[in-house]
Image (cartoon, rainbow, N blue to C red; front, side, top):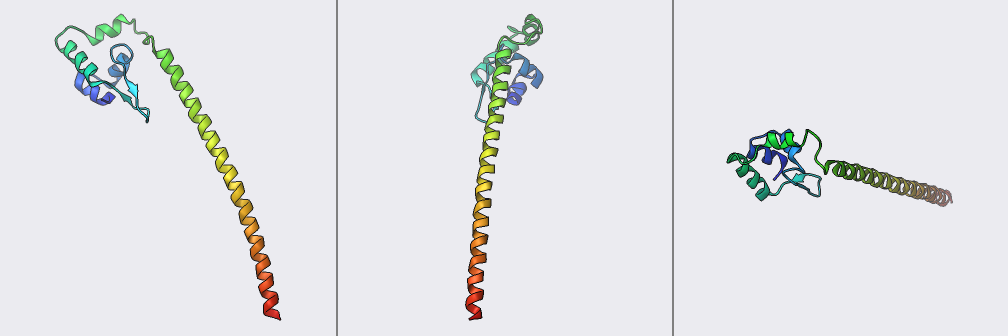
Length: 127
């Protein structure tokens, strides 16, 4: 389930869903970086709140308004992921520049060969 689907199921805002991540819900990230929630975990939470066994507001207040214990780790993971993506983009850009330089050299060689061939054709046409 996505954050939006979880918010609809719980009848809460996206902000609330984000606040309970790592506290009451433990999403994973898919290959595109989208948070995916386990539907059974969401349903269990929804049943608990519907039955009055659990208040999301009370749970968030009991955390003292502080970030969840995993948030620093998650922030660090995000930072490292962004750095890794930046390094990857830099490497891809360097590779493209090398390929472009190789293509420029090939173009110059081909232009020289065409000039040489044109000179030969002109000489032969003049004979």
